Image (tube, rainbow, N blue to C red; front, side, top):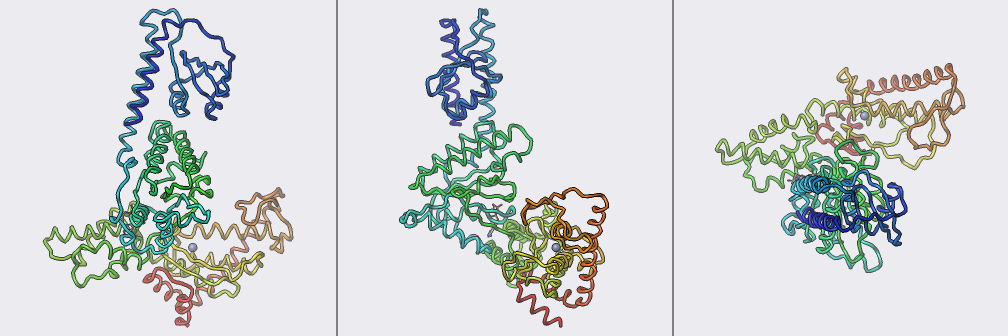
Length: 589
Ligand code: ADP
Ligand code: ZN
C-alpha cells in the first residue's frame, strides 16, 4: 500500500502543477531535439534530472544541465521508469487553444489511466502481502535444525552460514567477506523453506521471505521497488536472512523468458534490482540471501557469480534412512501403536519427499482419530498412503512399485556390466532414488584423471550405458523410456569415435567435425562430406553400437543370478556403494 499512495501524491501533484501552469504558460520553448531511444538510454544511465511533459512531448534536463526535447509514444509506460530513476516530473497539457472541456479531456484520460494503473498495482501489492512482507518472521528458537531430518549433508554445509550470522566479526576479522548468497536447489517439498527458516532459527535472526512467482504478475516497476524496500528493511535488521522462494521465476536467464503479460520486462527489472542490491552491501551488514529453486538449470548465470549466490546446496528426496528420520520428526507428537516402526513405513514410501511424509503422518493421525482409535496403526498409515498416492500420481513424484522394480533392474544392469569389464571405472554408487529427470543413477568414479581414451575404454562405456536397457529386456522382455538419456550418450560417443577420433577402420583417420569445439564442448557440427561418406559414417556408428549391444547381452545373460541379487538388494536399500555391490557379486558366484 505504501507505494501507490506515494505515487498518488506525486501524480496528483504533477496534475495540479500542470493545471496551474496551463493558463499562464502558453509560449512553447524551442529546444534541440533528441531521439527517444537516446533519451531512454540516458534515462536508464540515470543521467536525466528532470522532465516536463507536455502532451507526448518531453522537455528534459540532464545532469550536465543540457536541455533538449523528445517525443514519447507512450507516456504511461514511461512514467514509472521516470519515477524509478528519481526524475523530477512536471506535466502540462498540450498548449493549444482548446475550449475548457476539450483541454481537460487529456487530463481526465491521464487521470483515469493512472487510477486504473494504481488500482492494478495495488492489487498486485495485496497479492504480495503476507508473502513478501516487510515484517520479518520471528523464527528464533521455533524452527531449528532439529526439525530438519534426513538431509545431514545439507545441514552440515549450512551450519557455516549459521556461524556467520551468529558472529560475523569473527570471520571478517582477517579481511574475509561473508558470503552473501546461498542457493538451495532441489525438488518441491524437500525442505528448502524449512531449512532456510532453520538457519534463521538457529542463529536467532529475523527471517524475511518473498516468492519469485509473485513478481511475475506485477505491474512493471513494482517488483524492483519491492526488492529495494525489502533490502532496505533487511539492512536495518542485520544480521538477518532474506529467503527468496522460486527464485527461478525472477532469475530465469535473460532471453529465455516465456511469453506473458509484462512478464519478461518485469522479471528483468526485478532481477536487476536484486543483483544491484546484492552487490551493494556494506561489509558491516550481515544479510544473507537464501534462494530456493527446483529449476537450477534455467537460472541466469549472473546469479551464480562470486559475491552473489556462490554457495549452492543440492537437496534430493531422502533415501530410506532419511525417510525414517523425517518420519520420526513428524511422528514426535503422534500416538503410535507399539508394533509400528518408522523403518517399516520408510521402506514402503520410496520417492516420498519430506513434505509427503509430513502429510502422510498427519493424514494417518486424522484417519485413526476418525475411527475413534487410541493410537495410529499400520492400517491407518497404509490408508493415508493410498490417499496421498492417488492424489500424487498426477504429479508423477512418487514411484509405484512396478516402476521401482524396473528401475532397480535397469541400474543393476549398468552396474553389473561395469563390474564385469576390466577397462571400466569402478562403480561408486547406485541409487534408485529419482534424481532430476532420471529414475536412478549409477555413478562411476575414474581411478585417475584420464585425458585420453582408448577405443576399448569407449566401447566399454557404451556397453555400460546399454546395460540398463538390456537388463530390462532380459527380465521384463520390454523397454521403458527410462533409457533415453543412455541412448543419447551412447550415440554421441559412437559418433565421435567415428567422426572425431578416427577410430573406425573403414572411415579411417579423418575428422568430420568442426575442430574448434572442445572435448566437452557439447554438440558437434559435422563438416561437409559426400553422400557416400555419410552412409559409411552412419554404417560405422551403427556397427559400433550393434557390436556393443550383442556383447552386453551375452555378459548379462551369463550373470543373471548376479543381476537378480543386485536388483533385489537395490529394492531394499535403494542406495548402494561400490563395496556393497562387490559383496553381492562375490555372493552370486
Ligand atoms: P520446499 O521449500 O523444498 O518446497 P518445504 O520446506 O516447504 O519444502 O517443506 C514443506 C514441509 O515438509 C515442511 O514444512 C516440513 O513439515 C516437511 N519437510 C520437508 N522436508 C523435511 C525434512 N527434511 N525434515 C522434516 N520435515 C520436512
Ligand atoms: Zn540408465
